[in-house]
Image (cartoon, rainbow over all chains, first blue to last red; front, side):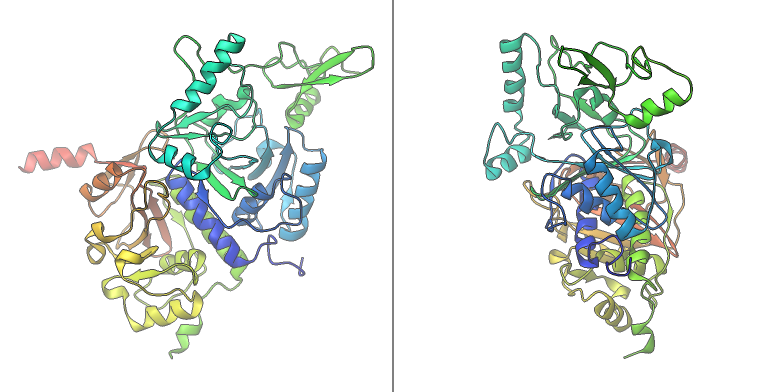
Length: 283
Length: 200
């Protein structure tokens, strides 16, 4: 503990990140540039989320990390251990016990409550980036509220596939102003972004952007009147806990085409199994 | 140099500012809520809450404007020692510090640019009271509506029309604070509106 400053980052860096977070909260959905630091992990492993978490954590917090919904994958375990060692915070895998949850690509199934903070790891914060590679142009498009190109992209989906085929990182409009990338969460999670009781913070380390959604913010997934947004998931119950309302991962279990579907949220699935729910593949 | 210039910072800067920031962030994320903030003991006329906010957010990269009574030797010396922030006029500040009347007119502060609306000033307003009364707030961060004692209503309504540009406000009083980001819609509470109609 004594080898590092509390929560790893130096105080000046934390102040810079904290100022960016406050401006992000004041302008929901707008990407605030920040001077991202090198972290002791490679870009793409959550350096943005880690810096945001470092700036918000206090020693009293209980910290949870999920990677694609799971508490027990490499990325989640290493980030959880990182803050256990550098910030001395308590850690948990139970969603309801956590005060700060860092997440890669999922929103927990259990509704979050006031007093919780959800920190997203974001790879590409700019929703328009794959349509317009120049930062100078996308910045202008945001300032002019010029989002026609995004609708063209969704329309091309419809003309090619008959429906909006974008299934993750599905663009949203925040409070009728900024179009925002919700990070690569499945579009199943999009309806949870709006009106959430918890504070949502987004950190992109390599791209040096922070953005935020205050609680109870209006977030609308882009769509068309004749092709309304649909939060989709695999049409199966969870093989382990039998849940029909959770987002599922498809697992290949042999080389004969055998497969099973299980909850991607490991805490949700385990909690259900502990209360006696059983799916068809449960041992 | 006064002895109290050197004292009054966070006893444990990393942990003290972490707790203080959470109070500021909760206030900014939930406009109208009143948060406790402690750990700083600045010289008068800075309140403990004001001191804690400045220690948490300010350093050599953040020009500060001290308005009215706040622009005194005690405050300057304390902030110079603890934050190193440069002192500037209102048109170039990132943070403005003062009582509401001293901070006016609001038109001189930077409100950001359309491409970088975050490059705008945050006004930290020292208040004599902070209570859930007088003005009704709606917008992001507020479930249905909230109430907060604001020094006036019109200035915040005008600020809201600039969105996504505009100023953000932190109100400090003793060891408590509240905040009002530019995204919040402000209106007079209906009870007060009725009282005004009755009086006219």
